[in-house]
Image (cartoon, rainbow, N blue to C red; front, side):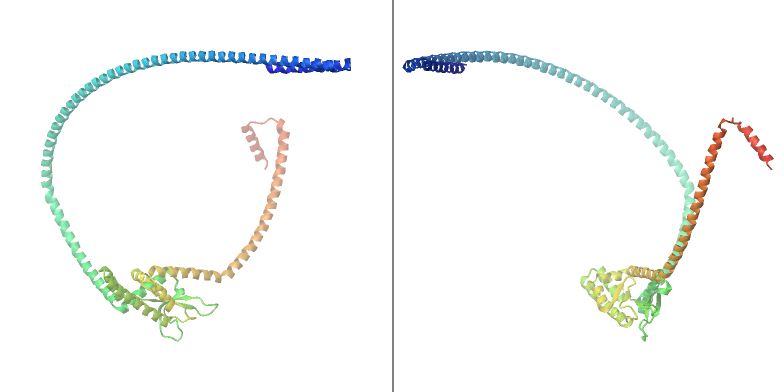
Length: 454
């Protein structure tokens, strides 16, 4: 505010000076009086500015003093109010603490009374439970004594009854038992006879397995059984001379088709059963003798190599035969020992062109060959299949023509039915105003008309 007044006074002073200068310039050409007047006015303006500045400073000091007094009064009022509020809060906190103390004391008194009441009730309940348990115990003891007495009496009666019945039935049971024992002894006697016969059969089997020729026959029988189960008689032959001009005959050979109408190609199969070498290996393994087992395994391996060489020399002669042959081992245990020897099967196949097979392995090979035979049969009859498909195609074309004609007839019948439906609706519209007769009357009239029609 003071700054605005100072600026306004300065502006007014400047305007006055300018007016005086203008008047002086109009009045006289001599500027000296005007300059004096201008200097005087300037001095007066400076004096007014100083007075105005002093007055402004005085008012500012008074305003600062009043503001300081107001702030001090406000601080005192705030301090007084804060003290009053703090006192009220302290009073409220004290009252709340007193109420909390009273509430705590009341709760403690109530809990104490409740605890005493619960203790009294528990004591009364315990005493009542003890009395009930005592009464129950006495009742149970009395009932138990009565039950023991009854059981003793009943057991005595049962004992007498059992003694009487046992004495009565013992002789009957003993007689029946002696009869059963006699029957069983007779059955045992028969069983001993059967065991003797079985021992004789086992001895015969041992002699069969001991004899090299008989063992070979047993392997051939097993091989023949597998071939009969998995192949048809036209697909294999027995005692075949696969090599032309040679008298060496292999036990069995599978007849593979040649190229075109050429002679068949034989796949030789020979059964081998080195029983002595295998038994030595099994005995060494049962005795847990690694050295003896390894020696027996080497002997078995050497024996199989010799047999493979013999098969390769006698029975493999391409192109009359395949470039390999099969060595059949009649037991899975022997085949497992051959498989267990590292590199033996690969060496026999690579060196002597002989594939070793056990019963299950040979069955898988024969099944594969059977599938191959079926595929060849399908290939041979493929021309017949194509002719049959051509005939089916021709008949199917005729069937399409028949279907087209049938569709035309069905369409004509549908058109006729549509026309009949239209005529029926037209007749219904014409007969809409005609009163309908009851069903019995209409049926009678229709029957009369049908009877009179002839």
